[in-house]
Every structure is written in structure tokens, then in C-alpha cells.
Image (cartoon, rainbow, N blue to C red; front, side, top):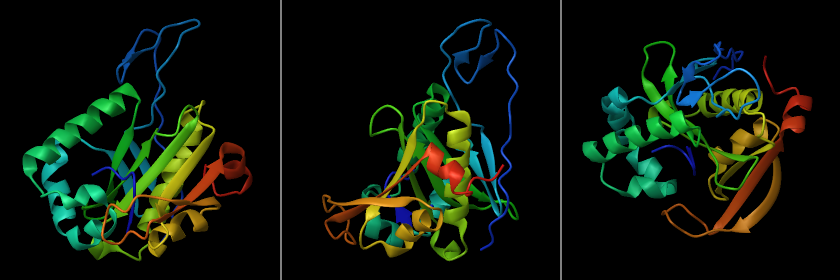
Amino acid sequence: MGCPGSPGPGQLGGVAIARHSVVCGEKFRGALFTCGPVSVIASLPDTISAGPIELRRWQPGDLPAVLDAVSASLPELRAWMPWARDPVIADSYADLLKNFHAAFDAGTEFAFGMVETSGLAVVGACGLHFRQGPGIGDIGYWVRTDRHRRGLATAAVRALTTAAFRYLDDLGEIHITMDKANLPSAGVPARLGFKLRMEEDREVLAPGHSGRGLRWMITRAEWQSAGTEVT
């Protein structure tokens, strides 16, 4: 299962999000917090609990686990994800992890690995990106092939959506897009109360693509009123 925008997607438990305290004048993930009126770079926690998995901010040391998860899932990833067409080269993925780390610090992109709470295996990825303009986020995800049909993508997107609306005050809505033919991926936003807002033409960039895309959206108010948010 994969959804474009992914960094490179069982049982649903409660979402418990780690919180951070900030002292005036403290440097926090690249943003200097000071007392009084100030412009602050918003950020997300490094770790977000999502029932059977945790979303963990990618670190450079995650390279072996990333290579293993991607290599184990290449046939399915290549059907949907344009980035999966490229050879799995360690140096390229090392650079990607460094870029994800820097973007997280800058607050321009939040890329997480999905890590099982039992066994600590990396079983996919989920990320929040900003490609549609101010106040709009895009969530992408993919799940390792041997962990499909366990609800992991749904758990990850639920947790990341809750965290995004909780911590990013300027975020007004979240989009999830996928090819119309990618039915397992489309089931994730549908289960979580996202609304299918439009069907649109899209470029065919992978063998599974149909040339038609689905765009799902949810606003902050819709997410809160739907009762999907877990506190």
C-alpha cells in the first residue's frame, strides 16, 4: 500500500502524543523561543504513538532499517510510487534521511518512520508535507509489504492528523491524494472521515497509475467534530 507524498504507509489504539516544554530563550529544533511577542517555527514531536506502531522522526542512523523495508517492498512500491523506480542505493537514501532531518528542524516537512512497538521493526513511512500553499498539509504513507492489512496506515494517518492539528496552529486542512486504482490506499482516508472532494486528471508516473486521481480532504473543524481525533 502506498500513497504519493510518502517519504522515500489491525488494531487501532489510542493516540498519546509526547509533549515538549520550552523555556524562554531555549533553542528548540532550530527555532529560538524568546519571551514576549515573537514569530516561532511550529514543529511536531519527534515521536508520536499510534497504537501498534510509533511514528518516529527519521534519523541518519535509520539507514539499514530503511533499506531493508524498501527492498522488501519494491514490487508493490514501484506499482504506485514514482520514487521507487530508482535503484536502492545506500548513499542516495543516506542523503534522503539527512534532508528529512534538516527539513524537520526547519519545520518545512515532517517525515516519520513507522516502527512496531513490539520488535522495533521499521514497517513503513508517513509524512506531512506542504505543497498546496499556506494552511494546507499533505499526508503520504506506505506500508511494508509483509505488514499489509493490519491497519497500520490507518493508525499512522490518524495519529499524524491529530498531531498536526494539535501542534500547527496555522494548519487549516489536510489533503491525501492517490491514484484512483489504488483502492487499499483510498480506504485509509475514507475510514478516518476524510471527504472525497474531487477526482482529477493526473500524470501517469508508475505502472499501476490509471491517469485519474482522488483527492481527499478534511478541515480542522471537521476532524474535531467527527470524533476521530484521539486525545
